[in-house]
Image 1 (cartoon, rainbow, N blue to C red):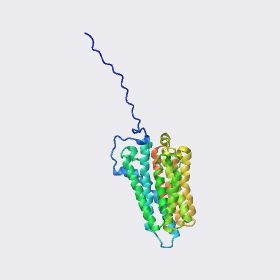
Image 2: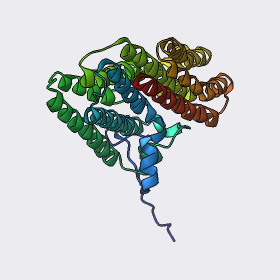
Image 3: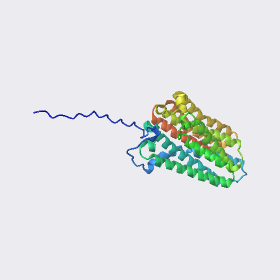
Image 4: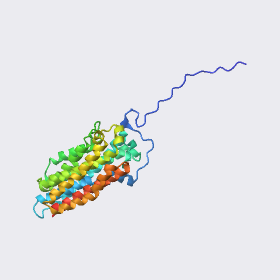
Length: 329
């Protein structure tokens, strides 16, 4: 009996697996999330990174205090101060969510060991995080517009637009400056000089030495906040192609720079205390600054750097509150 003839077919080529973190276009920024676990309210609060908001609160405190020095006794502008606070806080929350979105779709957060990220964890859709980020930018813009109308300083619109663009392009766009070692410079400018001097000017229409010195102090602490955050992620950022200042400087130099930035503001406080004795209370911030400096100098784990990050936020808040009290007296 003749054997049945078998029909031979050419071997099937296996389908190429889609690279992890790439969409159908092959673009790493088009990352697909097959399984999205819904984020809770607590996750959204964590994504806003509340413990870093002292970076936006402290400049407003110092600027308001400097304005009190420049104004006539009893002349206060609480509405303007609160609008400045709204602009600063909403802008920073918007920046935090925008960074979450941009880093998440680039895949930078895939091996992240730091604070929680919504997109990187897969708990929120990138589009949703983007909408929330833009909403906070819009709130900051609205508060800034009201402040502009009240003061009649229409050039504030340009300053506000520059601040929003700086917040977005930190990690957003094709060539984010945060990926090219410029993050610390922009943080010093916008979370130090612009926020503090802007708050002082809209309340007093002048800029005194108290405003300038305070702006440098809070700006340096803000830079320290970014440095300690980036030291923790040096290995991950280098692998992801994110060229932060800490990646360029290396581990040891970055730790030294952090210590300098977190301690120099206390030298400014000592100088101000010569004229405003209450400014000596700013030195209570050393109770958080010195442990933070020691941790950064010796840290080996991500948990230690996160603790130092939180202590740096406390330093910022204590510094700002002390100078507000000193100038107010």
